[in-house]
Image (cartoon, rainbow, N blue to C red; front, side):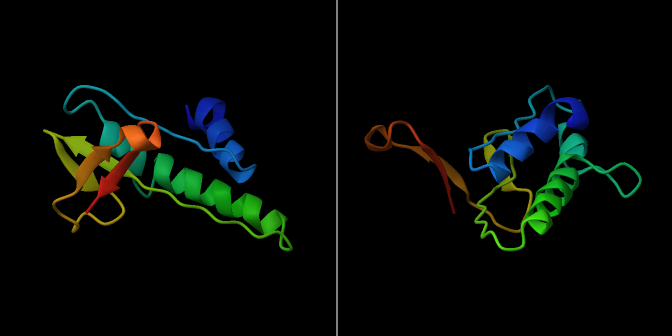
Length: 105
């Protein structure tokens, strides 16, 4: 799945576009494992990070700025997968920002 679909999204972020990879499914269907993986079978997060930095290394004279988040929403609780110790995160949206959603902690 990563090579045939998700890699294109990651490449588009290197080209300056916003990208979103969203895993949705019922409880215990493997969404978190798909995103994080294991040492033997890396998931979306490590594969995407490796791909991004591989592209960055190809252009040493170019400056890149990336902002990303990896979150899990379970039972209406937001969990930061990059820093699971963060607690009390909330999802906020605003009509003033055209419905842009922000994760606030």
